[in-house]
Amino acid sequence: MAYKRIEDRQKIIKIIDHLIAEKSDIQVIMKSGSTSFTSRIINANQNYPSLAKGTRAVIIIEKLAPEKGNDLIQVSPRLTLKFTVLDQPCACLINYIGISSMPPYFGFVLGMPEVIELEEKRVETRSIYGSPDFLTAVIRIGKAIKAQRVYELDVVDSSAHGLRMLIREKNLDLLDRVKVGDVIKDINFYASNAMLKVDGIVRHITKITEGKFKGGYYIGIESKDIIPGAKKKK
Image 1 (spheres, rainbow, N blue to C red):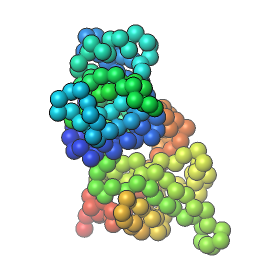
Image 2: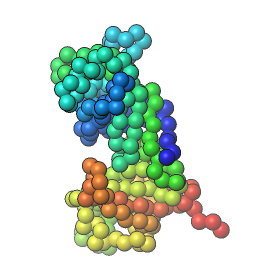
Image 3: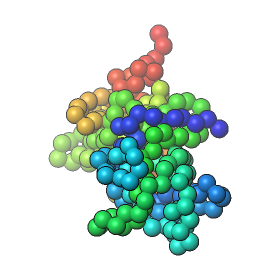
């Protein structure tokens, strides 16, 4: 199994912010054993006056379940966190700092991870928070403007072959309007500070059978105007 190491601080913060926003469960594993405890990250602070010398950037997690983990964590200076980001398993080593009793964040203070390892299940390399850093895509289906159906989809990741987007339950009727091989005109891709309009080819439509997006679909779009590796050979 291949692993990708994410060491860029801004990318790590993006992943932590994603876990907070989605209220995702994390698994906390003590160094002393293999038993895992469940929690959630509830806050990230870049300038925390921590008790650990030199430690400023921290995360705060809820109390653990089962409850016995709340005693064990206090005598475990080094922890392993495991979690899933966009259906990809991740893990990181992290330092225990102390108890958080500052309202509204009651729980435990941990150091910000310096490295996150992301398990790569695909042969091709994918980048969840790579460049171009597209966040959403807007697709318009229908010739007449008044009759057009507009779909706003989250961009999940990119590879050398295109972009993968998430079709949530509210947009499942898109599956009745497109199929693999279709060319979709004028797709608007939005990054945090830019917008790009391109044509794209539907390369795959995949049902999600597990995880938090179970029941939804991924749609893969190829466009030579976005991904250099997608350009056809002459």
